[in-house]
Image (tube, rainbow, N blue to C red; front, side):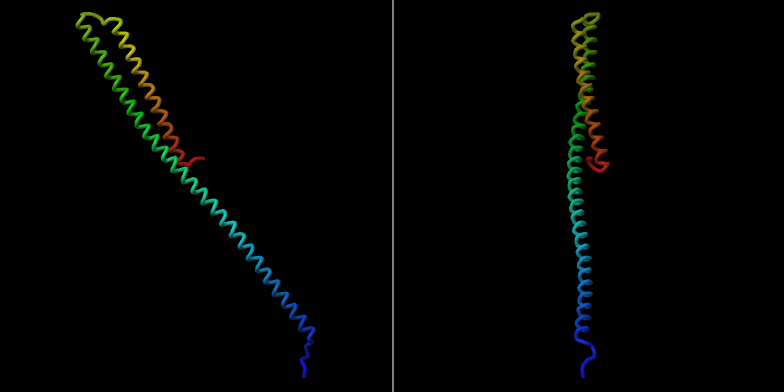
Length: 156
């Protein structure tokens, strides 16, 4: 004979079951969408962080190159200072030798013109020495500052 289940109730229960399945699939799709959006946001953050890291690496390389250049300039300034000190010592020795030679030749004190020329030469040498020492200090301070910046993680 026939099945005691009515065709209308069987269709209705199948419809309810279909609605339940569709609701579960919809919820799963919404979850997948949230996860995909979250993953995309993380990828963008990583791209930004990578870009910043690359910028910082370029800045660090530029700073290292600048430090190298300043260290070379410092070495040149120190060499210049040493040369100025040596020139000053040579000039002082020459002045002393001239004074001694003139004193012995004349049997007395050097002339005022000779003393004035020696004093002017000594002043010029002292000025050169002070300028070289000032440049050396300035370059040394720049190198120290850049080394600190590199040690603190780059330019800020």
